[in-house]
Length: 164
Image (cartoon, rainbow, N blue to C red; front, side, top):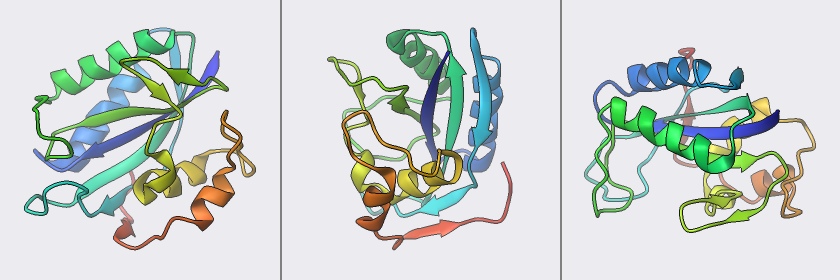
């Protein structure tokens, strides 16, 4: 089994319930086991400013699935929860599931880049990831999570008390 970290985000249709539903679906994923979930965070949207704040978390999943099979499973969960893929990037959405890290793999394929290509600049990913990842996590590309955190402001991010 490989440890995979998945970023979860939602800002439409009861975002906390969307994330809870996604976690239930992840826990039921074939050949996989949900092993940890971060705290819930609220973050400012990256895209158009006229959208609600996001709810975000990171989950750790141990899986035997191949990367593209896991990606297909995640996109199926998104679709089941009402995700509509539109041309506009970073717009509002019911659910967004991103593979952040997949074991020690470096992947650069048309459908999947791992580590996630914006992981280093997204506080709403780095801070929840740091909660559930090993203390001295080194990414497959050689970067250290602690260094990425030190360079990424917590501004615009709020840790919520409500558990997922």
